[in-house]
Image (cartoon, rainbow, N blue to C red; front, side):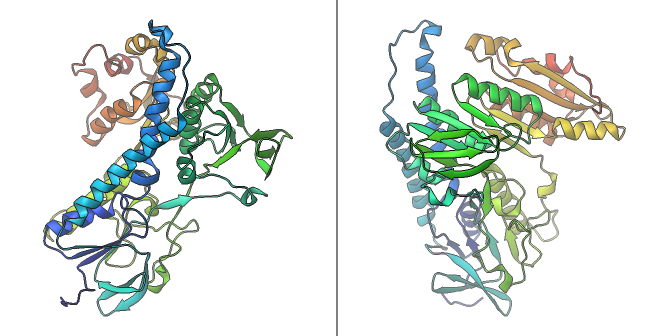
Length: 470
């Protein structure tokens, strides 16, 4: 290998939840790595996503519990919110997390961190050429981890408003009087509930017929009830025809003629991959119509020596899938050539939405299972409402339900959905059983801890019933 300071064993473009950890593992193995990031190390999760929102969620949770303290025999009086203090606490946590990451990575010999936008500039022999700003780098292997950005829908008048996205929302220090959320899915619902609990009026506008539309219908209904019970106005099945200014600041005209007024508007209608500025065409990589890069089971693109990790490969727009991607690639790169390769196709999809209570899902949805039943599969379903779970009653956390899908021939779990107290933790019990190839008997016959929500899984399994195809 050339001794040129611009020649590396591998270049990582993007420092989200895959790139830095992959770089660290390869550096520890003696490789020379360049990590290119134009913004902040840690990407969306540390700076504009998981870390700030879950920190802020705790402030919202405390406010919610304080308002309901009398139910538990605790008298507090009127609850007021120091909005700026809550937001500053959140920012402190972000700053500490990013500083820790920067300190850790910055102390690694063999790792060059370059703060610039990275893009391809073709090939030079067996190497790829990458421009980091005006700096020219070369390496035989490239890893892409550039993440996503907010998708802004083509609503007439929206671009003329000072709308908020997930980043600018978290920069606020003055409390919005009335936050209007465009989009009734995961980010939108989390932010709607947080800002409602922090003292804002909140409206959610969703063009589709239900919230979190990929979830089962009863889960979506339970989410809508949960939001409305907290005083959030939910508008479903209503496309936005136009956006503009109004007496409170902003207003949205809906398809049914209603007008929704607010002081601020948050656009939470999904994400778009950051692949359009990479100049992928210079090395022959194509994206799909939405901008995602297709990969094989080892996260390799169609071009040898180039991997796509995290949100841009369309395999799951979650921090945990991004980190899992790097785990797969690192293990494959560092293993013996003759060894078996880890595969992203083998993992079971799992995620959580961090409303309060949270939603957890793994594997198939009910609609998927019904389609399999129509093809002749024998599948059973078990459902219990959280209001019937002892621990939930003791905690006064009665919202939600637990649903399990079981293949009756193999005995294996096909999927589960949970909305309720600790659902984000409990869902991983089923996920790990699925990953280990366990059956319902594994869970039914195990010894649970009392009193917990998880202890109801064996009882629930014994209540399962055949699922129909309709």
